[in-house]
Amino acid sequence: MENYILLKAALLTEGIRSDIESLTAVGINYKEQNHGLFGWDFENHVDLKLPDDFCLPDGTVVQFRLNSKSQYYVKTHDDKLKLYLNEHEICEIKWIERPDFYNKKTTQNNDMVKIGQIGGRDCLFFCYQNYCSHFSSNKQCSFCNLVTTSKVYDSVIKKKDMTDIGEVAKAAWSEGNVNHILLTGGCFSHEQEVALVSEILESIKKHTGFERVPGVILPSPAKGDDIERYFETGINAIGYSMEIWDEKLYKAICPGKSESTSHAEFVKSIQTAVKIFGEGNVFVALVMGLEPKETFLQGIQTLSAMGANIVPFVWSPNPGSKLEGHRAPSAEWYFDVISEAAEIVYDNKVPSGIENHCYQCDGNSLLHDALRLKGIV
Figure 1 (tube, rainbow, N blue to C red):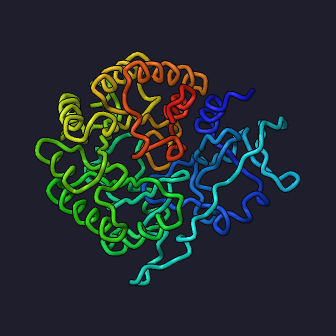
Figure 2: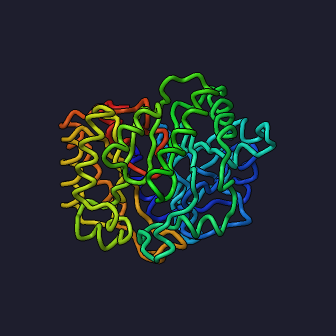
């Protein structure tokens, strides 16, 4: 039996390529990449439409990360997509179907796909600001390529109209595949961000009829009274992009963010958020692979004991980031560490929060997949 978590880790750390025949229906029948925030590929591909993600035979969702030198590749065989490692056939895969709303326009004649995109199979994603202020002072996180991706692809509307966002949410939910949303943006003024998020949520609630919206808001680190204000917008869950648990590495890798939000402030704010949003409704994003196993698992233990869920993204060196050209740890390292992390989360009995974020959202992390093996879906 194939170890699909290990395979997913390998595909994310080594990247993947595909023959042209396998890509013919991408952007027509199957969901294509639309760079709403980051670029996760190993190389840019402005003139080539690629799948956003795909599914392994057990339903595991994997993000497509182009690496034209990868030993993993997809080709069409007998009208099926087959994944190979060199000449060895591994398994059949499936691209994810393209949502109908990707072909529609808002009443203001804007392409809906340039406003909101589907992450994985069931998460509607809106980036309300494709900019991070830390880039202007050269203090951006070393792994981040948010601003450079926006310049390279220019594939989404940067400043989105509130009504357009509501219309896209209504259209996406009406198709029956979307279960939750993810709202995020780059780092900017807290006062402006809370007000903007409130407007966005009002539009989404108006167009969908939700009293509270299933999903996660992932703003600049929410502190103090802002946490309660985000709860009052009507979003079910809140996220914190803490990035790195080890305090010294956090300062080194995230120089701008660590100046404005310390490790201690993150921990205090997450504790407060759990009290307000409830256990399981706070999600902490970590970048997995940039700190030692020991400190990473310490973070998993502390955060899950507080009642927070963790979304540890599998790091690979993105083009346009300061770490471009570096190498991630091995797939085996990721598998071993995430297996231990899943045990910790399971033992701490953190509510899954799957009504707001689930394994079908995450083609770029492994923890949901590892917990699914324990019956947490």
